[in-house]
Image (tube, rainbow, N blue to C red; front, side):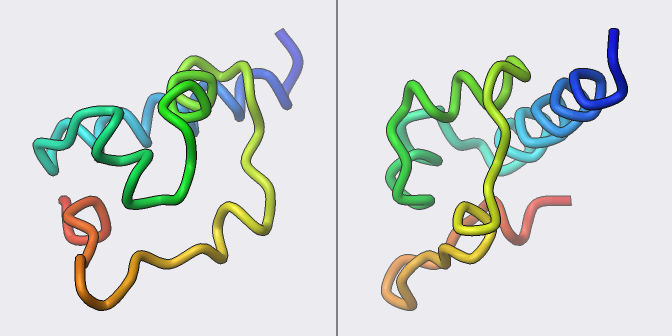
Length: 71
């Protein structure tokens, strides 16, 4: 496995852990992040990389993301 693939899988696992800790379903995270549920699934499985634009998206102030406060 290449370092890039391992990095994507590790990032996906961390995102899944945070989502579970925040008690969010994939559809809820997708809605908050402005992504599709299939994108969440692909990221969590390591099949899709995140882009800078993905990181720059912020939830609206009216619906703060529980994911951002998960520990």
